Amino acid sequence: MALHLNLYHEIQKQKQQSRRDPLKLGMYGLGVVALCLAGYYCMRLREASQVMGRLDQMQAEWEKMEPLQKAAETRGADLSKAIQTSDALVQKIENRFYWAPLLDQLLEATPKNVQITKFDGKSDIDNGASTCSFTITGLSSGNEPRRVAEELRTALHNKFAEKHGKVTAVFQALDDAAETVFLDGRPLPVANFGIKLDLTEPQQLVENTQPKKTRTR
Image 1 (tube, rainbow, N blue to C red):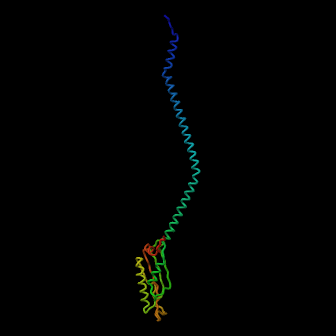
Image 2: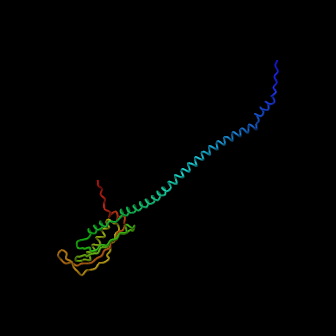
Image 3: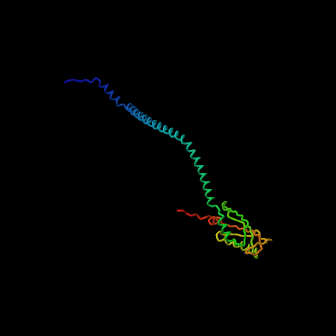
């Protein structure tokens, strides 16, 4: 029967105990954790570096685009002012007052024994006011020239009131003249008159005096 003696028994036992030492195992664990943290830190540092690089790139692009953006804002403000001015001009043109239709009505209401020698007109519609007025000066002839002038004033009032709402027609002057005129081959006395007409409701005036637009096909 063979006899075996292990002279390294104690040494082997100490080595096994040293391998199972909790403190040593803890140090190994801490080392692994530290290594993982170091790797995570490097990864985050790389991401941060990429972000900073992207930020620098975007900032450089913004510095290039900023003058263009300011120029665009200035151009936009100029265009806005130009559009406002154009709209104001268009509105002024569209709302302008036309005197020709009023003159036509004046001629229609004037009889042959009346001569108009002067016409003065003023319209405040373009300025947003509420009146349009005109004054006519002339000569009326007939057996009773003052009555002819009165009939003219009444005819003008009724004529313009048909289309222009409220109308006032008053004499500014009405005097007998020394001269006479020949009408239908006989002399007739003459009166000098001045009649002023005031027309209100400017929007209605604009609608009634604007020429009708025809469409072409």
